[in-house]
Length: 231
Image 1 (spheres, rainbow, N blue to C red):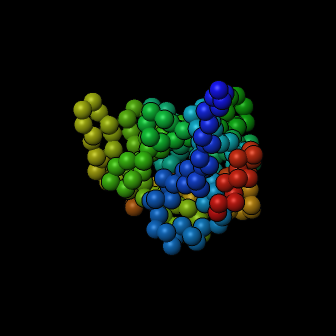
Image 2 (image 1 turned 135 degrees about the vertical axis):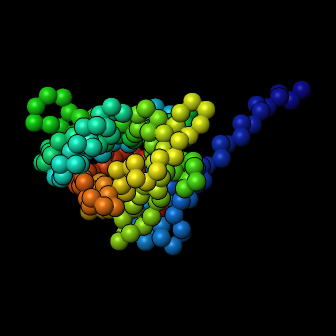
Image 3 (image 1 turned 30 degrees about the horizontal axis):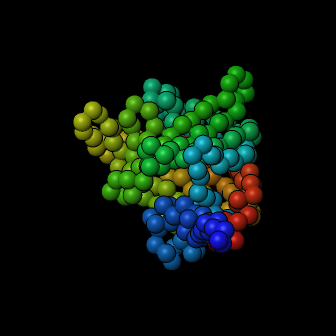
């Protein structure tokens, strides 16, 4: 009698390029605009994070400009978790960590800014791929905003569209006169593994209230070398 052979174990199918990347940001930008971005920016916003994984960026705050009204706004927003820099810091270390939010279909962004004394300021926000623009960012106490994703001067730009407060059972859209103005965040490449972050809030009547510029570099892992080849 012939011995029964071992059952063949099928080989696992290799991951396709789309499975190695997170295409959610890319889907919010026209293909031609996405192609204009530097490869480093495309790679950074296409990095797929698994459960329990984080992408970490280390750098420094170059400068933080706050008008008197901008400073006052930042202090008032301490009531909802201090989502804006609260002091005119410059040339201090900073760390950004991005973690996949599996339950909320998005990402958790944590930013740490060193201060002259005491503990660093920690800013937390959650980006979720939903809403009329396809992307929302939320801070504390239900406060959030819908974001437009654009490409301007080879930088990836996030610009506020509408502010809202999520209350039990419904969402309150804030009238424009009750908002701090237009918030814009831009990411542009300064090197193969480095980028510039600029945060600005500009009010329609009061002008620019806040501007912060920071520089960061990627903390590279082995998988980054694989995904880099796909861009």
